[in-house]
Amino acid sequence: MDEFSPRTQKKLGPEALFNWAVKALGRRFYTEAELTQRLGQRAANEDDVPATINRLRGIGYLDDARAAEAHAYVRRELDRLGRRRVLSELEHRGVSPDIAEKTVDEVYAEVDETEQIRAFLKRKLGRKTEEPIEDPKLLARLYAAMQRAGYSSAGIAAALRRLSPDADWLDEFSGE
Image 1 (cartoon, one colour):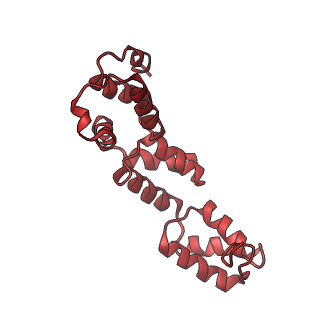
Image 2: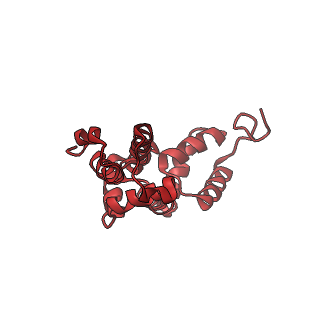
Image 3: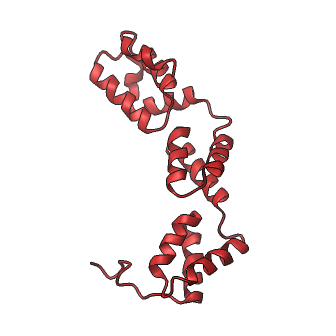
């Protein structure tokens, strides 16, 4: 166990807990659920956690909608993930389903999934996107990778069909 593990760290009082939370929020966006968990690990008294959360919320430092928007934008632009994956991640981070759905709808409103899939395949395959793919195992791996990335089955099937006209097994996914 190292000196920075939660079990060996000095427990913080109310003001120190607030200051730690402000610094943590300065480094990255946290959802209320994530920050509550982290504060619980650091607090000398667990009763200080809700007061700290309320104080942060009151001054506008803690906002699940803003954290969700930042996360969704980064995952869309930098990681090129599909809306399903981002929606799942937001819900896993403790964002309410209503806020998560609304945020993903807004962030992905102008996104062309076909273009996103094309860019994903270009990153995975490089120049090979111009050549037909004959290997069914490679097609299956690409399909699974794109599913994990959060793209729709119909979009994936259409993209892979362009790469491999012999992939009849993709027909069952095109109707989604």
